[in-house]
Length: 283
Image (cartoon, rainbow, N blue to C red; front, side, top):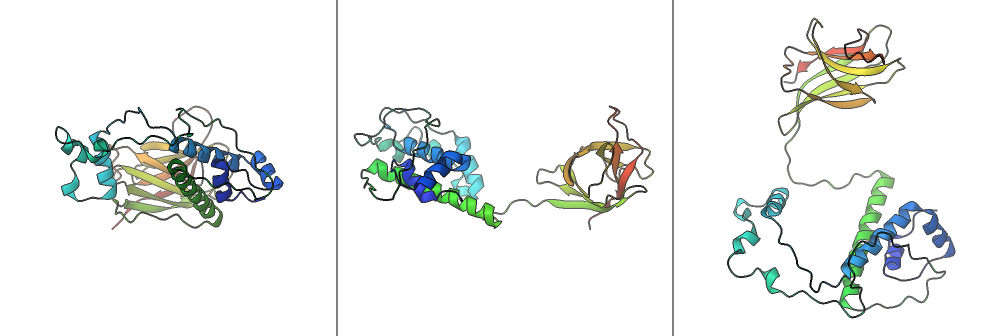
């Protein structure tokens, strides 16, 4: 059976008792649907808390700085709006009194993550109309969360990529690359490239087809005559990324070498290379 409909889970989180016996059995046996319902119930709980007497903490300026940077706002908006109002008139948020909860709404505070999922009741009749501002807010939050949950599930099932932000980000620059050719007695082949990250650091990205070996695969950069080798790490899968120390000059260490390392505790190169290639600077 497929996962339960997000709208049904939303109504259950709001206290409705709907659904068929089969859906009730699925909810009890499916960890994904049960966890989703608990999350939606938590959203309802938070949305219906009584805010009376709660002292709101003013966020620090670093929060606005992060928001400003993430949204790519104009430099003229760089100053924290709350800081600008400090010492002057109260901010609009400070002028507005906190609303009290509608009578009958929960007034306890705390984590309700341990709440038991609401059981479903057979049939779809008996749906009660719910009124009141807090329930409307809670319903909006829960339905929005359910829509996001459904979208995430749809993307995961269909393989459609999630929307990507249009905000420009620094690109990763490819500095050098090489093909990795198998050495005698081995069959693994692939490629490697050196990338410069936006923060200026470098990494070696290795892709190498797997083959049966006795030990584990070590990743190295070495001098042209292979008399000097620098270990970068262990290639556990078909691909991996390895930080290149700042002091390593790849002009002096242009060889990428993947070795078969025995489980003997010796960190030195085993002299049994699986594949190798020479880095060529990217023009």
